[in-house]
Image (tube, rainbow, N blue to C red; front, side, top):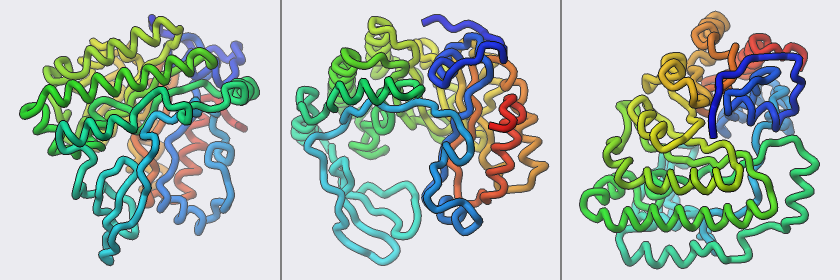
Amino acid sequence: MPITKGRIDPALKLNNRERMVRAILGQDVDRLPLTLWGPWGETLERWRQEGYPEDANFGAYFGLDTGFSDVAVNLGYYPGFEYKVLEDRGGTKLIQDGSGSILEIMADHSTIPKIISPAVSGRESWEKLKERLDPRSPERYPDWQAEQERFAGSDAAVQIGDFPCGLFGTLRDMMGVEELLVGFYDDPELIHDMMDYLTDFWLAIYEEAARYIQIDRIHIWEDMSGKQGPLISPTMFREFMTANYKKIIAFAKDRNIPIISVDTDGNMDVMMTVLNEAGINMVMPFEVQAGCDVVAIKKQYPHICLFGGIDKRALTKDRETIDAELDRVDSLFHQSGYIPGLDHLVHPEVSFDNFKYFVEQLKIRLGMEGV
């Protein structure tokens, strides 16, 4: 899946799917795509008080590109776990989530939950959980004729995978961060088995989907880094994850799926090396507050498409700050191989007016005036 350095050529006149794929592969495009992370629920509540229409579609309202659409397969548990509130503790709630874990969450706003009892606490619970991870379950799959017709009537690029499908990321949700990190040392055979099994499980579903739908992108969600850097070392990544990444990439190559992307928050500078070694060709979202600099990273890895890296915190301030942040990354707007975007979801400190201004200014820089 070679990537070349492409030009911006307005004469090309591409549709959304062509533009998305070609921009990610670094080929010539008419302009860069504009598909942004959406707002948190609390952000939408604020915006509605400031004039955002109650029933507005985020992408359509702001004139964004269609971007990617997911193939309608079930990549999680079947049967799934029931989400239910086990106890209301006033400021917090004790819940069972869709993964079967028992969590304590804040009652009135979104935050990282506290894991009380993880879905996987050892070999026995993992073997039991695998009963819900059978790729042969017919309930996982849509009516393929209807799915083919859906994509035929759309210019969306086609994606499979996404949250919570990743090796580190999914195990983190199953076990909790601390238990997973300890498991790499105390029970490496279990960690290997979980990662190997999940890779084969997802690829079996992707194989079925690829029989009916031409897929453009396999997306892997990891969230394996924090502000100080990765939660595992490159050596551990190579030992536990590289072989499965290469298996996914080989699968994609055999089925003419050109894009393999990874989403992980935090500082990814160190992990870019191993993702590059594995053959990943798109990475996101490059959080500025964690020390990521997409301009510098793009110089080091010109063949990898970067998505994001615009500091969301700038949108909480004034228009001059927003302009300065766009100036900082402006060099990336003039060549293929970059997808403009904020470095995470839009949080509630961002006003509706500031977000509108940000989108307007970004469109001007991308040559999308009037869209």
